[in-house]
Length: 153
Length: 126
Image 1 (cartoon, each protein chain N blue to C red):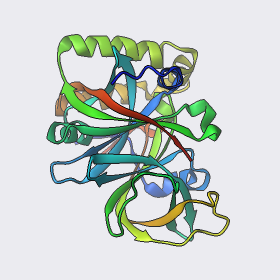
Image 2: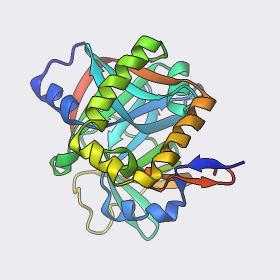
Image 3: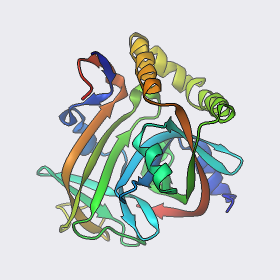
């Protein structure tokens, strides 16, 4: 399916953190908040191969993802997209994802302000990312939407 | 060996339970994983979860679930409580915010918390 409803596209554009539900090979549930971008009707969520989210997707491709606009939490309107996911590790995908993530999360007043407010922690952040890279490659969980629905709380 | 960790003592994130920025429940159902936004009331140390009445799927009693409470948008603001547990039947809490919901209790088996604003070196990854 294509997510082409204007209200759905709007929430995908404005939401900053998606929460992706996955199942392990034993059927155990997990849910993780991840950064994401939209790419040609698909959703790319960034993580690393060693994480539970990525390992689960490799075991069971079915996912359920929640999106809401953080600045308007009182609206209690949430978009849920269910679909099939795969783990992408190609360099071209990584580069494209990294550029889009930088534009969305870093090269913005909020993103720059957040880094400036934590300058002393930047070395720890770099070390944290380096540790992650030692455990496994960065990857993108690519979700192909199959159903989309509005949920009200 | 020193490691940088994001993990914190869950007790340091209990403020998330008192003001609940956003909460959702995850469980397995016949069509795969289900992510469901929920209302959370932390009352007397119990995790009472309100699921909207019109939710198409709900977890069964004793089913394994994960309850996620998280906040933040930018890297150093990201915080979360991740609670793996079992669902038990429960009655609506006092002053339940959602009158028409189904209420369950999540009995925790394992709780993890993280806060990227507190990245720090520790001797062993916790």
